[in-house]
Amino acid sequence: MSNSPVIYQQKLLDNLAESKKHLLRLENAIQALESRVHFPITQTDYTHILQSVELLAYSDQIIYRFSKLQDTIGAKLFKSVLLYEGENVNRPFLDILNRLEAMDIINIESWFEIRELRNEIAHDYDEHDETAIKLLNAILKRKKELKNTLKSIENLLNL
Image (cartoon, one colour):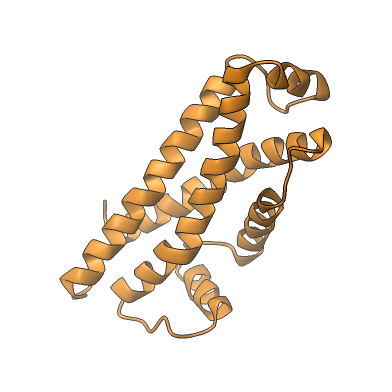
């Protein structure tokens, strides 16, 4: 563990805890939905989801929590990791990502794919069933990468 100021360590721990909260709620919603429909979701499954207030709520929760998780990691956690490590964060985001990749925390290509998925979520998916199905299935695949990112950061902190 480095001799980073306590404030940077606490900020990192807070951002990690927030990320883990979003991950836990995402995983709980996925588990609840998977108990009623099977992934990958098909059009038939999605029709069933739309007919159930409960299943639709799980679906919306999955999409919302994935988005919040990606936002929290990208906007807060990454910078707090570098500050904890005593590095300057007043640089282009790509430089931050390159440093995190060098630290074996992320894979830049995968991060950009996750960010693109999050950007697709930001658009209105309610009007197009095919888009919603694609998003839900992609989230299930990409969740593991975000979870691994959090594990790598925990390993850095020896948690």
